[in-house]
Amino acid sequence: MAFLHSHSTECMSSELYLFTLPATQTSIESSSFLHYKPVSSLSDDVDAPLEFVVPASSEHYFDLAHTMIHVHAKIKTPPNNAYPYKAYIETLLNYAPAANESHLTSSLRYDDTSGGFDSPANAVSTGTAPMIVNKGIKEATLIVRRVKISPGVLLAHAQALSKTTAKYPITRVEVKSFTLNSGILGDSIDNVIHGQLPKRIILGFVENKAFNGNRALNPFNFQHFSINYIFLYVDGVQIPSKPLQPRFTGLDKLYIDAFQTLYTGTGVHVLNEDFGINRYNYYKGNFLTAFDLTPDLSAHCGTHWNLVRSGRIRIEVRFETALLTAINCIVYAEYDNVLEIDSSRQIEF
Image (tube, rainbow, N blue to C red; front, top):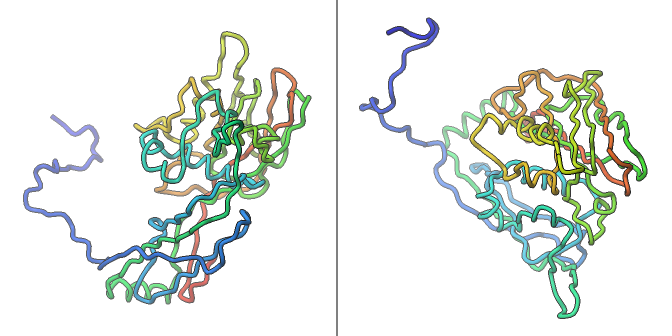
């Protein structure tokens, strides 16, 4: 027997580590969840902000990954901006069906029925007619996990902060919307991105009336609108090299290439993971196309960055039949960025 390659190093099966024990965590001494009420008064105005004040502590850190906000009974019309699309797309493409059907229901996340996106549930029924009700916030609580750090770690952090900044790699998300007028057979959307190029772009199309808050329509019903041609120009380079040319009309529908981008563009195709969108419900309200723009297709990978590139992105899209109504192209773009904090707690982003 021989090694497969001379650069391959020798290792031992973990079952044979008979004399070692798991490492012991000593940096965090204790933690607790603290509840804070808003300092601003609650209002029936659904657009009124909530403001919380969390006192600082020299020997504690706040664990934002385990910080939650609890709101009691607020039903409201979605605001006329793009943030809900950021929240929806991130949830849709980052959680498996098991999560959607269990703990995400606590934040009112429920999968819509394919083909029934524009059949809204009734919040209240009067017995003769459904009625949607706007309600103010009854109660709000910010639940913060506060962590007590060992003195040695605090001292080491303080010494390091006197020489450099604390660095937090983050994924910055930008969501844009572009209107396509009714009656057209295609459009070229210029300067979708101008400047730093994102590592990934996800595209979706919704009715303009739904985007602007028509209660009879679902703003998250990503329809195909009989698209038969779509691709990106990234600094003059066509992506994908062969345009996507789905067909949604007739008996012989053909859209697997577009469907596959949703998995290749998010990196899920190489993992034993999924987010509950299959080839059958894809074109019935989940028509999204994803494009990984990194040289090594690593947009989903958090182990390294790629060189920052600047340029322009243009979207080319065509339809088999003229649009019967105005629609919006939703552009979800992800960027690698870093947030830095100095010893004076000044933030640079």
